[in-house]
Length: 316
Image 1 (cartoon, rainbow, N blue to C red):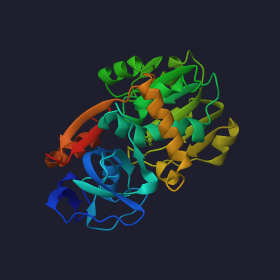
Image 2: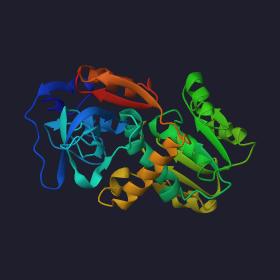
Image 3: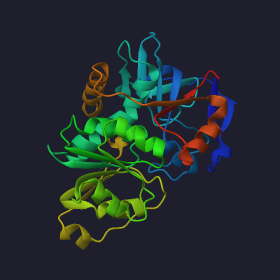
Image 4: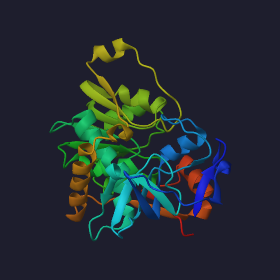
């Protein structure tokens, strides 16, 4: 089978399309004939060996797939690695049937990005009715869904950040009340202005570095910062006094900690499928890259040239 494998960690140049033996599933696994492999920013961290989890070489990247199982049932699956391939083995516990009428792209968007957005509100931030939310990178895979879920989950006002006029316009179309350029010289002031001069209650933050620091200062007393990514590669440190002075909280979230807890995945995913079927949310599907162009896909991810759910087509 064709697969994307790396034999050393590094930049996009280490990604190679090779022929490998088809994987064999264990008793608790499912063999998936992959129609689409999801592309995530975390994959670039895996490629560099800078991810939260460490991997051995050689490695086939890819943590999510959409396809069919041995019985022909359409499924989406979360897996530790091996998704960038024509076939992949996935745990039965993290394989879910796709409802009729839902295409591969939206189904994949709801698997990692949708579940992450759901848990950012429900599990990590514990969003309360009437609170104000800031969604960093509101046109991205997680961000675009977080913007759409905010008000159904009780938020009164949604502020998104996005790096271009086009992406900021998209966040407004998706339901944000205001859109801010994250490159603003005084990002804290820009967020406060977007909230009529008032501090905000919840920030969903995946960049790190200066954006983390600036949005932290925009939090109201008892506000919560949820950190679920470090796209800038710049980690932050906090002094406890900074948290205590305004009773603020910082909560980390990583979807991989939900693995092995099927109730944290199956029920929220079913809710997301239902909301999509009813037209309450619309997963944003971006470009589908041929597997042969996987290097370009990673270059576009790192350069922030993408929006919506990105995928690889293993057949090309």
